[in-house]
Image (cartoon, rainbow over all chains, first blue to last red; front, side, top):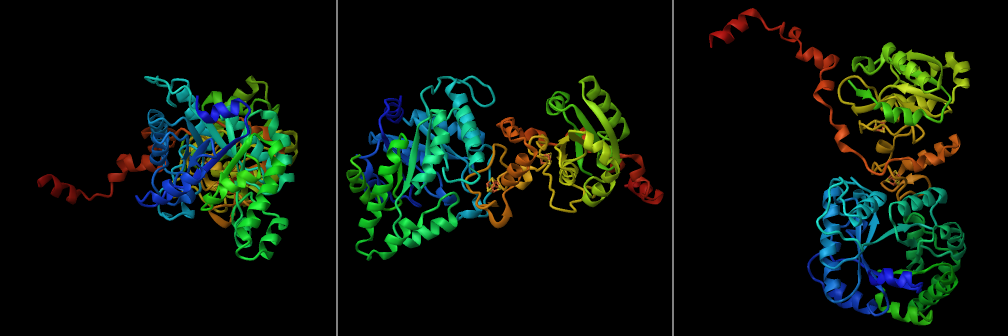
Length: 293
Length: 240
Ligand code: SF4
Ligand code: SF4
């Protein structure tokens, strides 16, 4: 059983982090900086899969390096770049390299990234990647062929957007993901504890652990960008104004304070946090200290 | 020619089960050429439905269902029968089913699976598109095509990129899944979303040889096609 699964099954408030692989083979920033800041404070670390459709080192490779260091990776798999043969191959390949946690995503469209001329695959999607994982866990591939050696203890994750509109559609999809074997959820970034509470009121009946997604807002500019361009994310004015008013030197401190406040509000509602620091990994320990986590 | 073939019987019965009364609309274009439409198919389906306890309130054949304006103007004559029907079974390619669905406020059910929309016929006079996925999902998606209206051709529902009803790919483009959601909500059929299959079968997009030899293709293969070759040319060829 993976450490992540163990932690959630024991009912511990569980924290995961996230790193994005570099574009190129210089690992210093990713492994020595980002990972080293957070590794002692999180149970497991997501590694993104060509995030935002921008080509980078594969998630599988960085996950393998993390596993070799004794850390606990969460392999993100999107449906954009590979068909069902390649995806199942990577799930099995990850398993033999020590990867137990896998998170299924549909993936952004190619048009958003740095290879807009590439072929969008989407043979599977966030739901059917879970179907594939569950099938492999039960000893058969998607075509029904028997496996030699069964990766029975893969821990299957998925994502959900608490601020999505229409929320009914989001909940129907969440239910579908659970039917296909999702064992934990990480959420898209959320900043409004009321919205999160409403979502958890509806989602807690599924009894599947939810880790609340935290993206530290670094500035008013970033908040506005997220409000305009990231679907399902709404940073309230009550967070933007204090950041606007803070001086440049005070801004990180203010950002952290605002996030601490939010985390304290949502902590009783969910089973953990998923922190996407996006370059602010060095502030994560301080943030968690202030939350007594 | 838009190649469309009858839906597998079991799948069709599954889709109509739950309805007590249906109206049948058939396209007089490609399906006739593909031997998957016309009067014989209307009769066959009427019989099949009655056997399954479903009343057929009426039926009509309209020349080209891909012409939405034509569909609207012809269906007006059947208003009374349509009012008595809970859904409309449409014998056509995916475009015809979508166009019909656009004109009425009850669910549409495709009687055929579309394999290909290549060639001369098969108009795209409006926003409806069919990619010939071979497994027409329109009965479950409120007559809106998830394959062509969703930029990622997803069948498991909306992705995280939808914002204000628009698609992540283009600010002005409607999110197909949002349209499906709105339509199913209006029809009171949101539970359809739970019935969609998880996986697509891409084999079904392939057009089998048998279906390649209908009408226009048949003409190409027939003797008549070599008629214009002059006798003198033939002689030359045989002398070489
Ligand atoms: S679901 Fe769409 S692409 Fe598939 S046959 Fe129907 S209309 Fe065509
Ligand atoms: S935003 Fe809507 S139409 Fe666009 S890819 Fe996602 S689900 Fe499909």
